[in-house]
Length: 284
Image 1 (cartoon, one colour):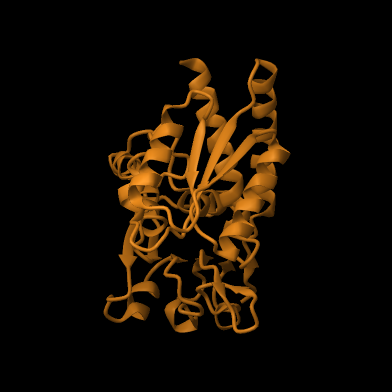
Image 2: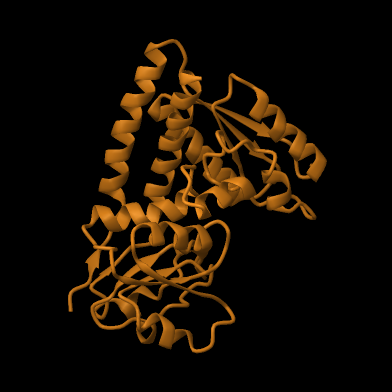
């Protein structure tokens, strides 16, 4: 079987083109969208991602401020900064970059981000609203999976989707988004007994566990669709996914590549969320 490649390039390009137009319209009305990126780490991969976000924002016509609180920032300091940015009418959107300093829990500090500016859907309030099927910004990576599937014409209604991973960043919110698309969802995780039996029964498998090469041929039934959300460092320093692509290729009907699959769509959605937040702010 030939395995199709579910690249994110086309979906990201379409989103970026629309976002650029929307941002330009806001700027023409008097103020460009503004994103605040709050950072409290010295992680090289995080620094690369922040620079990538800044570049993407600039290319879309979005103003981007980076607030670096340093690696010794504590929970109180982070909450105060996020609360201040939430209260600042000049800021339309807020992103809190991870990893966080030792001892700081994401859910504790993210609660200080107002849902109207929480463009990556990380706060407990945003996650609760999503679970209640109330309009809110969903975590961009989780949303990117759904957008990628739809872009490639893959039907979700009535399909059985196995999500491997139960994080608040991808697994749990993705399950909510898939249920909203009328899919039947199974969430598997590190303590799932006989993971292969669970995933091989699914029409679509989403690997989001953060373990390189976890999903192999035995985890995928013939003709299934596989979405790889993983971004792990390989032995040679390259980025590899949670799926052993060579093992799955030829068995799956379609597979998203790493890199080049979910990632570009995630970044494009974050920029779209920033502009949407700015549009809502302008209407207040």
